Length: 132
Image (cartoon, rainbow, N blue to C red; front, side):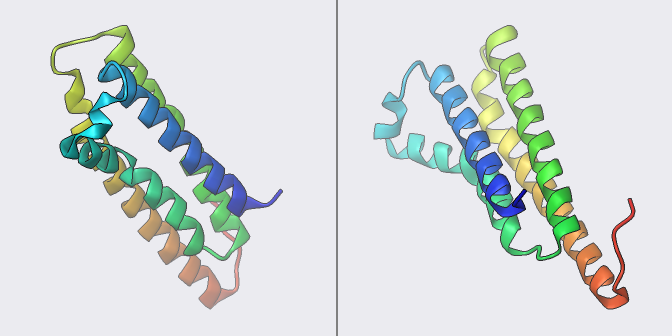
């Protein structure tokens, strides 16, 4: 199985899920005609761009596999959080999830990406395999 297309597909599916939940919260896609709506959508999709970009930084198969597993876990977890926040337990402040969750996601993506990149550099120096 090729890892790079799977990472791209995971990032695309995550972005589509986030966009669908954003449309659900806004009761349609009318918000995309406004500048603030476009900026909010770009902010919501930013973590998935980081997930997608991660595939260009990892050239070792074992690290790419770990990035794919992390990506799948994150997409599923974020979809569950959106579902719980917007559908199962709706509240007046639900839309704040589109402000804070992407910030947490992007921070986590960057932190895990830096750790994986560091691990990749260490493994290249030693010529070893990741055993964690």
